[in-house]
Image (cartoon, one colour):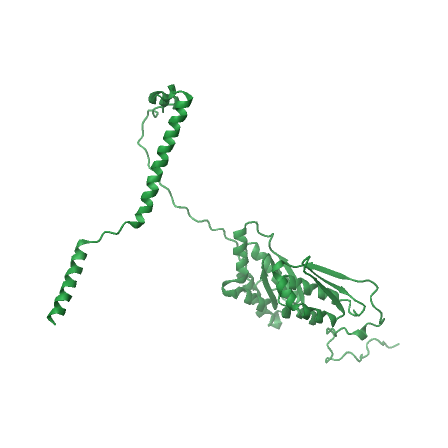
Length: 329
């Protein structure tokens, strides 16, 4: 009996893109009934985002209403909530709405964040970098490396990963394809672990050029990629030369004890009251001495500089010549 599965199918045409996902429309929901359960997601936002969110919340509501999603902005608690309604027809739309409010909370502008609702191939990721570095000054330096001088490093990463990247506070918000998000996350996390982004940028540029060559499609690219070795270059400390003391076989003379010094000065035989009075006088004497030193330091700025007598004579001579020339004229 001849095989039937080898026949030409009507959909086996090169013009048809089998990987294309058509947009999910209300008529695609064959049951035509609302969801049995309500799904909701909420996220908090910082205080400084309150003014901007109040301005754009009308646009956010209209964009989500098209997909049958309800949204609530709570300024008292500082939170945004999205939930499904009876008009919701796409199960994935609530997940897209969740990503939208997450991006808005992390300072992504609404025109950019809205793209996540329109494009099914676009996803988002929020990387928490605040707890990756313990020292605050070190954290600020490494976060600045992601931006680079005048934002050049950030632009290069956006071009190579095809992602939108926003560094804000203790987080980095990413938007793009899944492959680009994975690469961008690796670059950001390695940067906070003290691996400079320029190494990853070089690697991504080489991969981009190799992807254009169809002959290398099924070959490993390890031999083309750079391998950077970590080098701990120790800075040389200035060598301190100690002066050698003249050698003597005799031990140093024994230093007098504090009691001996007090007995020599007569302080040892004073009463407690006299000792306290003596210590107070000594303290006042030291204060007066420091006061005089501070006064001299302050008066240094008001001491006029000494002029050279020869320069002064030359100036006076030149002045006299001018006056004589003017009188002769």
